[in-house]
Image 1 (spheres, rainbow, N blue to C red):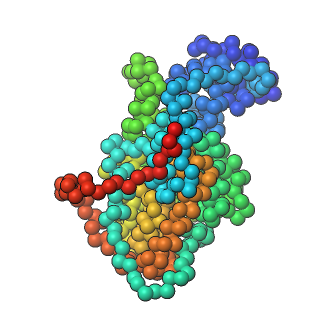
Image 2: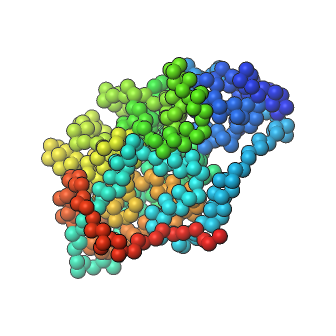
Image 3: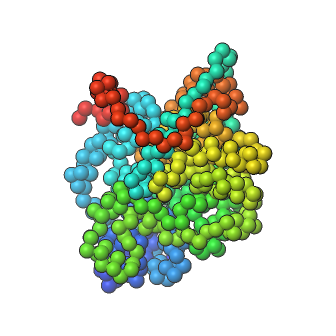
Length: 508
Ligand code: 173
C-alpha cells in the first residue's frame, strides 16, 4: 500500500473536516475519522488539512506516535497511510511570521556568546528569552503552584559543608561508576520528553555531548528523536540508559524493552510517579491560546479528551495507571537489564524496591511536575539512607542497590552534597534542555565544561580527592527536614545589596 504515489495536488483537495488528509514524513494519512480523537484537538490538524504537517508534528510527537503510542482502539486503520506523496508536487505550507516571532528571532540573533554564560542559571535565563513560548511553557512548567519545583532547588540550601583542610588536593578525581558503568562525573543526563520543541536536533544534542564528556544519557520513552536514531548516534562503547513509560498494551512495552536490550541499553528506569500527569498550568495556559475555548468546552461536555490540559497530557494517554508492585516480576521476566524505579518518594517504597530485587531507585518528584508538595529528592535521600540502611544493614553508596536523586540541581556543589549523603549519582534534566534550546550541542558541551570546572574547584575546597572521601560527616544536613517559613527579611539590608546579573542580550 505504501508503494502508491499520490500527488501533492490530490492531497490538497482533501482539506476539510469531511475528508482530511495530511502528509507526515512523506506519507499521506487519512485522519478524517481520527480528528475528534486527536488528543491535541482537531483544530491543529485541520490547519494542515491537505498539507504537509511534518514541521508541526515532529517536535510534539515521538516518531512512531501514529502507529505505536495511541491506545490500541485508536491505531490503524483509523489513521492509516494511503501511500507516499510525490515530493516534487507538494506545496510549501506558508507559515505567517508574526511580530512576536520576529522579535523572538531578533533575540536569538542577540544571544550572548557562550563565553559569557558562566553557570547553568544563565542558560535558563537565555532560554526563557529565546525559546518559542510554547516550548518554554512546556519545559519550565510544573505541577499546580510549583512549590515542589522550587523546593527541589531550595532544599540544597539547607545542606551546608563541613570541609576538611590541609589535605593534598593537587589531584582531584570526581569520576565514578553508575550501575557498574564508568562515568566522568557523578551525574547523568536524565530523561526529558520532546527535545525537538527546543532545538531541531532534539535529544541528539545530548547524545553527542554525553559522548564527548564521558557521561551517561537516559533516553526518554517520549523522545522527539526515534529511539534507534539516538542509539545509532552513540559512539562505540558509549553507555545509554532508557526511561520507560509503561503502555496499557503490555505487548508494546515488552517489544520496546526487549528491543532496547538488544540495542545495548544498559539499564531500565521505570517511571512510577506518573499514573496521571500533573496539572501544569503554564503549559495549559499556553494551550488555551492555541485552542478555540468554545470547542474545548463542547468537547469536555461530550466527555472527550480535555484539550485544556496541555501538550504533555495530550500525548500521555497510553501510560498505564494500573501499574502495580505485582507487575515487577513481569519486568524481571522480560529483561535482564537492571531495573530501577524512577520517582520513589519515601523510604518504605525504597525498601520494597530493594526487597523486590531491583537495582536501585531514583528519589525524584519528576522535576516538580507531578505531585505538588512532594518532598525534594535530596531530602528523601537522607531518610532512605538512614531507614533502609538500618533495616537491611546497607551503607550507601553500594554496588547492589544504588540511590539516585534528581530535581533542582544547578551546580556541581549540589551534586556533591547528594553524593555526601549517599547518592551514587544525580540526574540533571532541564538545565541541559535549556542549554541546547539556546545554543544546540555547543550549549550542552559548555554546560558540561562549566560543571567540570565546578567539580574540580569544589572537590579541592571541601578537601576530597575522590568521591570516596566525600563522607556524610562532610555535610551538615540537620535542617534538611525542616520546611521553615522564613522570618520577614531585613529589607533595608537587602535593598542595599546589588543583585548579581544574568548574561544579557547584546545591545540591539
Ligand atoms: O514530565 C513530562 O512532561 C513527562 O514526563 C511527559 C509524560 C507524558 C508525555 C509527555 C511528557
